[in-house]
Image (cartoon, rainbow, N blue to C red; front, side, top):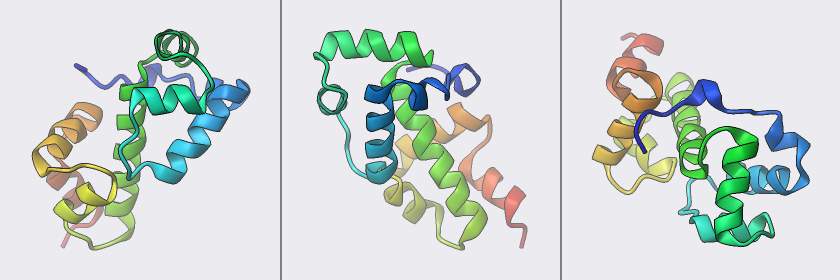
Length: 123
């Protein structure tokens, strides 16, 4: 997936287009669950290949990158508002292992989850 290009996400498209608004609502509700490309395409009522192209064209990033950014944003919010461990937060936002979460967090924020947590909740 490479760099997480959060700045390139067209957030307005996720509200403007009914198919994408429906998908966004589902993902916000179920971000902690596994959401496959096939499942996302079904929610948007599009064929998988067409959905992938449609999503990228309208939103500016691939579905996986957008879903990662949604999960990392939820993790950041949790770090700011709770004292949960980074491991617990990673599992709460849908990651099955800490290594994948740490890698995604660093790609999206430019810092480790621990660095971020310390910066928002210094002890």
